[in-house]
Image (tube, rainbow, N blue to C red; front, side, top):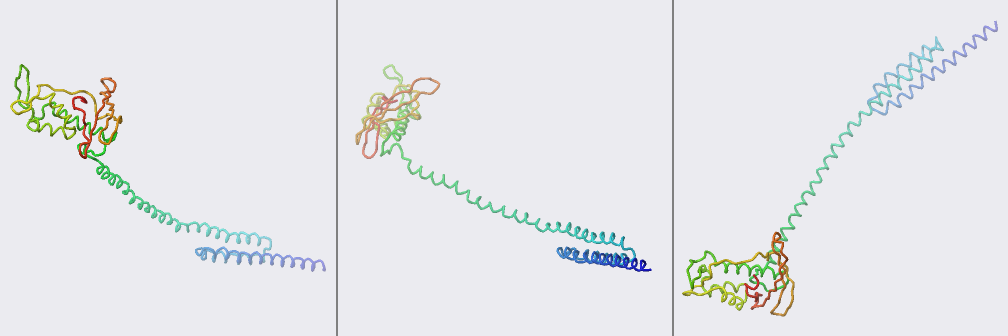
Length: 291
């Protein structure tokens, strides 16, 4: 009889133990589930549904103590899965931060400010151009002579020499004199006074008269020359000058003048004398001596 009582007591103890375990298991999800569900505000409805699931599981454990624990564990895992689903829903929230790249694109328009600075560069050449124009001096009004300004004056003198030796433009009519063919010079340089005035823009008066007396004749008050053309192949536009002698009013420069490349001739060396007449420098060498 005592054994039956002990058996019943032990059964009651085991049932009580199982009951307390079931109650503890049922109470545990009720605490943990709300803790996870409170983080995302979206998960609150889902958390309330699983909270009702452990209640039937606890009553089942009273009649079937051993199997009662098995449903209680999945019941506890069900809120965890719901919480996991809530966590899976939370990554959707970064859709709001996804708008941040769109806002970061807007500052990309800021580099348009440097684009407004770029036009400042083209303004620099425009300011330097007038400076270069201001320093340019007419060769016929050269008041400072050096190895650079000497060449432009020589080019001006060459141009006036070639115009005169070719008879001007247009050339006057031809005629015979002493068995030779002559032509009159054009109207603008058709007299000795006009031709001397034209040449003395680049030459001294003495150099101009020496040239006129050698190549021109005066017929009935008009200047004429032999009906022929002259000139050479030297490229004075590529000449370089080196000063040889210098005084306050007279200077000499050695010009190195090349021939065209196809002629394969060595450079010519020509000495040109300069003299200051009034305020401007003139070439004192006769034109035909240089050219």
